[in-house]
Image (spheres, rainbow, N blue to C red):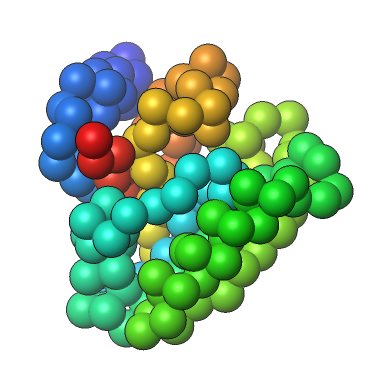
Length: 162
């Protein structure tokens, strides 16, 4: 019950804090500088510099590789997604990064969790809390709740700027 309560509080904070980044750290987390950070997105949103700043700052500070994860349900990106991916690539020019594409498993949360479990060098998972379709899917699928209960690494939630 205690784990569920703490996870519920984390989810509540993530849902209600609107304009500052949040790092949720699992209780049993044994601190280590992350070699890799997993940043999940769907390229349906054009990120702006202030939104990415916390993620880029952390990546630079720790000299971590930023893994931009696209969980696909379709094989091909549409024109908007391709453009947004290119814009993101340009924003990441000063950060060591790579783009990953994986097929969605049962849910977005389970796909992220599986990658985290398979790749022990992933030391943080990051998500942008947008008002767009991707975030809505995460909320409906309760990905934040699922990640808050399951993740073994810190979860960075970055707010969308208006």
